[in-house]
Image 1 (cartoon, rainbow, N blue to C red):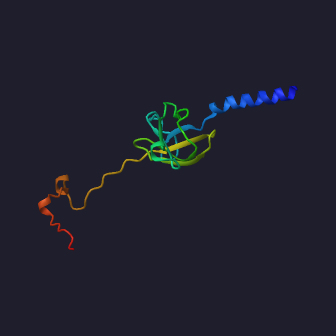
Image 2 (image 1 turned 30 degrees about the horizontal axis):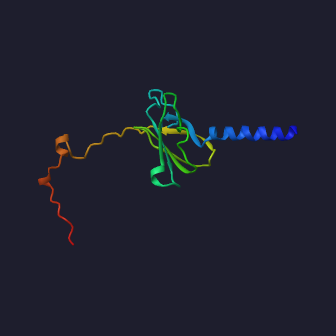
Image 3 (image 1 turned 180 degrees about the vertical axis):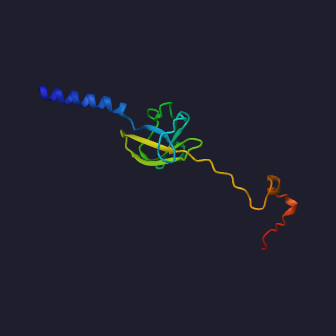
Length: 149
């Protein structure tokens, strides 16, 4: 008789805990330079993580969360349905990073992203131009013809 009670108790406990273990995606976002070294002057807060379910109708497909000051993010409870997710971390001034994960009904996935800083381009001069004004093209100076049909 005690075995039956123990089994029943175990089933009740597992059944009670399963809703608390809904599908989720969590992790961290790190900001790095071209050499994969942490960028000390920037904070990951303000980065966004988009979670796009590619296996459900469009109106149920997207969920986004903001990253905190320590770089942590987590999906909101009960916001993710089972399916295949395209997860992308973005921040202005950094390259977007994307990962793909499969979520089951109770799957919890941890993803860590390293966003590389986009280096500012160097300005280059146009050969033969002495000043910036020499580089400006006025519409009347260029003869552009529509393509012949």
